[in-house]
Length: 264
Picture 1 (cartoon, rainbow, N blue to C red):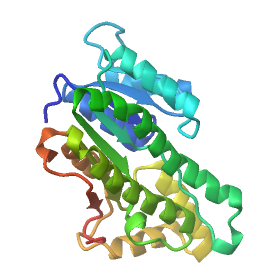
Picture 2: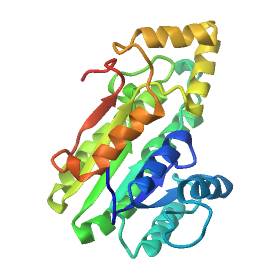
Picture 3: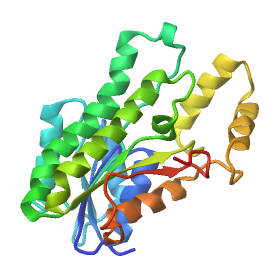
């Protein structure tokens, strides 16, 4: 899939999924700006995605930023815009956190932290990138929700609520930006085994359900009609499609990548 001449900003891009998306966009010809919480991780991801040589055609640049802080989001977007001559064609909001616990055990701080990263972070990057897209009357925004945003997951009430909010935000923004030829969609992945998030979640289920990790995986896999859990490649493929001109007639959609477990 060609992204020649396009520019992209990917949040959460030091993580497994975000980095894979950034790399795939760069391999398709896009110039990519990477952001994540820690500068060391961003620099490592830039080297991995864009190559070691700081010479044209450098495909990746980056700057650390906290997605929950508007001043830092503004700085990241400004740096990306400066690097790309004011052009940001694609925004992929991957940054997110997960939490787990019985509702009666959740602290208000736990609830707020999950909403701050997942929802506020997505909102802030859209807020500051959209004016650049409007000016050029073109843009592709891909937000990351979750299967849990469609059907809530037990022991993850705050995460499920936050991811459902992202779907609503995506749909509202799709209506708002359609006249500017800006497509806004979101992904709703199921469990992706190759990520650190799954390691955190599985540890929580092992603790709360009293089951070995292998049994937890077996139970989740049994619920998937296609008989396996998602891979990073599965998620990347759908993200690239939504970021491409092949998705020009799609907006406001929440696309499941769940192997059939979620069908609405």
